[in-house]
Length: 509
Image (cartoon, rainbow, N blue to C red; front, top):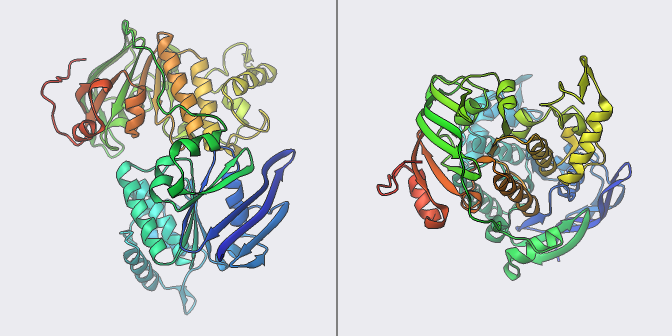
């Protein structure tokens, strides 16, 4: 059997933590091979070993049958291995072309030949159906486009084997469809793809074979055609996984959040939230469904004090909190799980323990007379890490060293522990595995059952359908319908999200 990549009994240890425990991965030419595992199972570590970012502590790597030592990413590039990272490695102020050629610039008479580079990028983009403008600035293009730039970067360097690390974590459903098409085109051109993911739906749709790893060990390699999502989920987590969350009917109480005629502008000064009305009561989960870019982000930013509302009112428990500073809003009883955990959820260079008290560090027992009490901070952190199953070597580990799922669990632990009256969860399961998603959904429902109001904003329709008691559909900055998840379908929701009106539902909340 001709394998393009063989990773045989790879071992990687960080201090006392074994990230990869003798894992074997074999990828055939022209296949899409999924690497499936929970957050923190060792998927990204294994791929970082293949890409030369880490050196293995044991085992052997073969490329096209020949043993190789990949000492750094340049060696990987020379062997035809390219990596599309989960968190894009792009320079915002550079154009698409400048990012793609960075480090391997085509020169003529000692100067960079931009014309030639742009032409090459344009040809590559057309060949693989990527439709990227070579002259656009990175800061001005969507997340889906930025990912295509990352793919082009690897192709420009001549990669035959592409590693995609969680490529759909930040994409809209439409962009995911397009990405799957791009992957199929790449394979038809003779490329081989390793797809790091924990989205079972995608594996079933696009992959040929799948290797499952759990807690650093290789569990099994299966043909996708001969398996099903339930079997894969059980192999990945080590137990049966519930895809729908058990919950009793909601018992909504008094209004906790009341939004009236809210108007918010986006960063460009364009009205993003346009006269929005919504009520969320105690003891219910209200899900907001909508296509990305219909005012969800601006709505959350206005609710949490990150941007100023132009007009309208926001009340919490009958008290107006419109345009208060973020700290005042937090103290009034709002918890916020932000959609971008790196930008707004964590200070990545702080230890994970200190991230657990970001909203409460100035209060006793964590501070006294302006001095921080680190013992109390780390005691609290240890308790939350245990309670929310945050997998970290210890509480002193920097937040950036944790996997995305464990970062998210830490944020949720911090927000839930403060016991807020209103919990805003924005994309709470973005980039998480089925076990972590199940855990987070349970926690949201738990908050509801304790009489809290929960506002869930998510692009994952099945998540909104599964967790919400009512679904508010947002379109062009307004709530255009409120539906009962038990009485609607994904198709109907999809139509509403695209702006079709529903007469009988009305918009009364």
